[in-house]
Every structure is written in structure tokens, then in C-alpha cells.
Length: 254
Image (cartoon, rainbow, N blue to C red; front, top):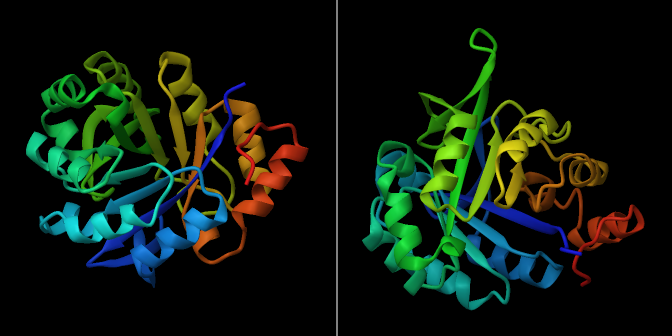
């Protein structure tokens, strides 16, 4: 049985980890390297590091911070935020990343997915999808630039395209649920899963340990990602995994 993964996410802006509600009102959480050390020791299965300042302002890739972060980890590290080309991906992988997460650049230039998966392997290429429901269109649409800019690309169409182009994983964030702590967007996740054969990381909405169990049982995603609930120690990963095991969800022991 494939074990489910628990993944903390570090959103980094100007060198500090931040968190907001529905991508707004960001507040400082702490130093990314120190938080990486904490999560590595706490039983996290992977770590996602998203440089949202790079996405907003075009900052240089924070390679030194990434190097120091990767040196503290014995778990996979995914890096995203403002990646522009294959050279950026090479630099990130050489600095210690195990995978990269692409969003805005992939939406703008989808051919980078083909090129990156061919050069580095699909297992290295995660496509991040920031999805928002549009009632008038009765559909979800992709957003770029850290959830700041809407696109005309329907989420489900994009999922089909990126899988054909060689993406190895999807990181799906529900912008409607992000930071609300009312549970994951099962409807969105189930729709995506029904048309995709690659692993899905669910993001946006975790507020209680029961939300993780419900998501794993009702959608069969490969992993659940959260930020503030872990950063604020409202829920410890050890306690979450103990609970999930009791609920019959297979997780890696710590």
C-alpha cells in the first residue's frame, strides 16, 4: 500500500516565511532554514518551499538559502516561485532541490514542461495549480503570479494538458479554501483525480486533523499540504500521523 504524505509548505517572501488567508494579509512566521530543521525532525514526509517574493518582483533565486535549507533535510525538498527557464531549474536542483514546482511560467510557456521533463525526468517536475471557482462560468480557472492574476484557462483543461506534456505531479491549491481551515476542496480534487493519473498534492483549507483523514478517504490524493496549522503548532505532525493511523490511513511512521 502506498503511504500518504504529509507536507508542510513554507511560503517565503523577502527571506521570511509568511502566511495569509486566501493569499492576502501576509504575516511573518519565521526563518525558512530553522523551520526546515524543525519539520525534518518532526516527521514531515516532504517540504515545499515557495518563494512568493520571486513570483511578485522577479527577485533572484535564493540559492544560498535553498542550499542551507537542503543541508538540514533528509526528506525531499520541492522549490517553486518565479522559475523562468531550464537554467533556473538546473540551478535549483544543483543547490539541493529534489523537485521544482512550476506555475506562472508553465501557464505562459507550456513547452517548458516538455523540455524540463525530458531533461530532468518527470519525477522532478511538479505543476502547481492555483484554482478559483467562477460561479458565472460554473468552472474553476487557473491563477498565476501567486494567485494575483486570473487566466482564461480552465483548471481541468490545464490538468489534461500538463499531464500530456510530462508533468510528474500536481500541487493543487484551492484559493477559495486557502487559509479558511474548513477542510480541503474535495469536489475540486475529485474532479481533477477523475481525469488524471499522476499524484496529486492537496492544498488549501486544512484546519483540523479530521480534514486530512477526510481528504485521504474521500479523494485518494497522494499527499496533503498545509502551512499555518503546522507553523502555529495548532497540530503537530506526530499527532496527526498517529490520528491518521487510527483512522486507517497508511502513513510513514516517525
